[in-house]
Amino acid sequence: MKFIIAGLLFSSMTFANCFEYSNANTEIKWTAYKTAKKAGVGGAFKKFEIKTTKKQGTIKDLVKGARFTIDVNSVHTKDTSRDAKIERFFFKDMKISGVVNKIDSNYLYIDMTLAGKTMKVPMKYDIEDGELEAEGTIDVLDFALSENLAALNKACYALHEGKTWSDVQIEIESKFSKCN
Image (tube, rainbow, N blue to C red):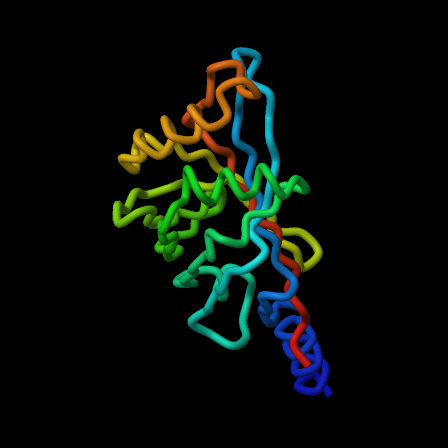
């Protein structure tokens, strides 16, 4: 009888920690800043691909080693003219990709590549009820994107009141499904 109870407890604990990942349940959002008052402009990427190294496991197991690519032409800010300017003047033909190389109790560490330059980006995260929320900040100047930033600032000079900030907040929200 003890073995049956122990087996049931172990299997229920294993099931409780078993999750699966799907791109359909993930959002990649960002906030960039304009004007001297540092007004936030929020947006998201609608097309991206994230590949995990495992099919099932704990959320941390699924996240560690995950690789991603982002389609920069899928910018969505709820303003199509703004989206077109961001794509044309900032992203141009840029590629964004990365891999989660480390995860500890507080941060995900992503090797993120923008326009061919890779930087380690720490993102503070929280996991609760099968959902991961992570946020971090990048400085586009660290990725040698000063010309891109200047081109966007010039294209949006009046709207940005002459100031486009180089720091961008990144957020990832992902809901994981329990294993079947």
